[in-house]
Length: 320
Image 1 (cartoon, rainbow, N blue to C red):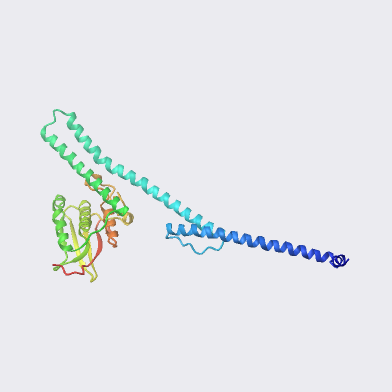
Image 2: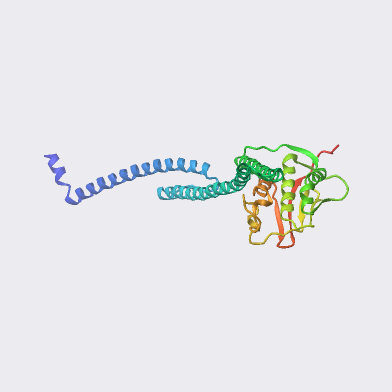
């Protein structure tokens, strides 16, 4: 009897609110469970983003606030990676095409001269000697291209390491000039070094800097004017030694100047490859100076000449 009385005291409204409370409690529980699941998802995405950040140091992965933002950042990272790979693939195709083109010219020349000698049994000794000399010259150019390709590939892969030492770059400049006198004489170009008295002591990789100077002077000779000049100019700024290779040659137009350090790029399209060179000399110079933590720059006026310059750290040790 008391139980029935108690039940009779509950109205329909009271039961309604009981059901509302149960539903609300269920909703809270579901919400808590969803938030816990969302936190687990975000935690997993955060780990993935951390991995992306390691692979993409240039990207800014800020603290994400929700799943949508996290997924968007991962998508953006992958999208930029794909775009970068597409660009690299374009470079790879161009590189292979350029290599094939550069190698094809001397190979076909050698083959042509040798075939002429083999096909002409009555060729006189003087003509045979001339053809063999031309074949040998193209073979030398082929060897130079292969060596330069090997060098630039090692630089770009980070395989080569610099060997720093203290040396007088003025003496090195004189050695480079002496080694290239024959090439300069063929075009009646005067080579000289201009620096004044005293030593110019630097700390760098001597072998690589010799390579830079040699490539720059050779490039100047190839594109110089007959009876012109090429000079290596040295100056001391206090903390650095500035090295300049200047000439009064054909110069470089403003249009192509930004591309002169690209592999296989030739500023003067009117000149054929008979002028020599692998098309990699300036690119190798840039890689060497980048490895030294320095920049190589060019100033040029078309028809008036060019100046290539770079800086080197001065030696801190007295030079014996």
